[in-house]
Image (cartoon, rainbow, N blue to C red):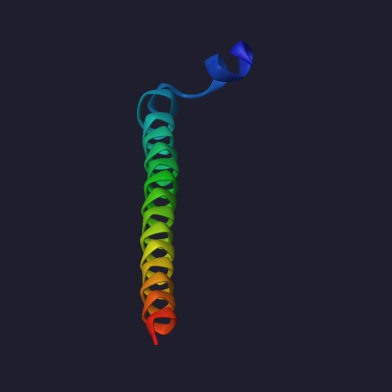
Length: 63
């Protein structure tokens, strides 16, 4: 692996590889953040539906 790294031109080692690493890190961060936001929204929807069901059941049991 070290031989492959040393065989690359310096502009590839100093410019191209860091750009690829930054882009991949950004994509990975975006996937993690968007999945967390998605889970949060799903959780809020689930809590809202559960609250609506509880309210409807309480109203139905009074009659």
